[in-house]
Amino acid sequence: MLTVGLTGGIGAGKSEVARLLASYGAVLVDSDRIAREVVEPGTEGLAAVVAEFGTEVLAPDGSLDRPRLGAIVFADEERRKALNAIVHPLVGRRSAELQQAAGPDAIVVHDVPLLTENGLAPLYDVVIVVDAAPDTQLDRLVRLRGMTADEARARMAAQATREQRLAVADVVIGNDGPLDELEPQVRAAWDGLVARAATA
Image 1: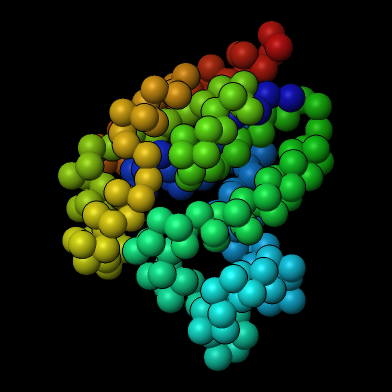
Image 2: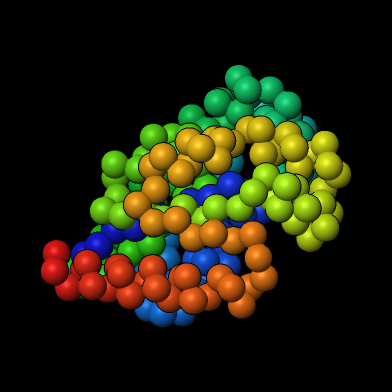
């Protein structure tokens, strides 16, 4: 089994790279998706979040009001740390279960937005960083995700710097251009992973 940590700043295009790697045959473990699963109604995760932040972070249907919680934690470093202390261990446990189920010959790609911030690079055989200039990230967040420029900058500021991410990278995939420039880079990275897995 070859384990790969995939990361990149918000708006860098990491999700598209993850999608392509999965289409080539990678077993994808998506930390964002797991992070949503572990706080679904009825979970211990949601109960812990409500205990910490109060019932005002619940939507009328009893699910987590993610925008409301996001507004709280992205404005306050200590509140964000409190949320991470609840969610990250649950995500880690579920990710380990999914990796275990993948089989001995699998190339398992962990899509981990906060890989750099949480010092997780040593956990993986290979770290791939999807890199985009801050101006590119800002443009995509405003144009494609409907954030205000201030909201986008706050999200970007809450993450590791570009330099910090690149410092932990074994493979860098540049994504400032159009999608048709991305696919050949991802294919080349995948071919490298396959070759490495074959000699592991």
